[in-house]
Image (cartoon, rainbow, N blue to C red; front, side, top):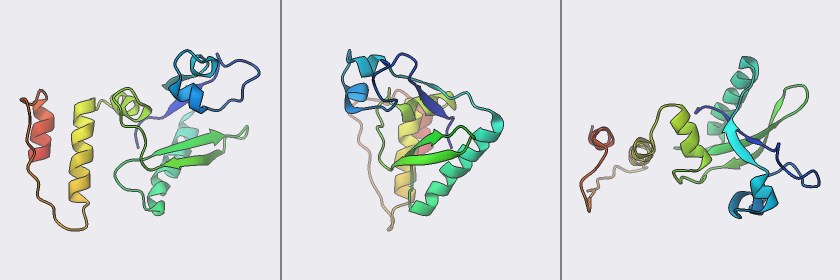
Length: 147
């Protein structure tokens, strides 16, 4: 489980719901886009453990490789899953990559780990040749895939 992140709605206009809408996610300059900031979650250790247990439990849904769980925490500190995204955004500036970076995993290494996990998890053995158009710039990622 990668480090927890959260959306800070502190700059959201008062008349807007505290959810990330399409405009809040994809329309730069929109009041809802300006009103949300992705930050590292700062929660007490007990809540962090409960959230991590929920995340590990997502495997029971058949998730493999990577996924993102969206949760809300009630006033009593109980986490509730509101969305399971088995194919979350993998862009270098997306939440998944930011969480990996907080865990010390750079974007190139993250991508290679996902490729390797997919190949290892394939229902039948796969063999593939990777053809680079230019030399790899991240030796450890290349080595990791070859290992």
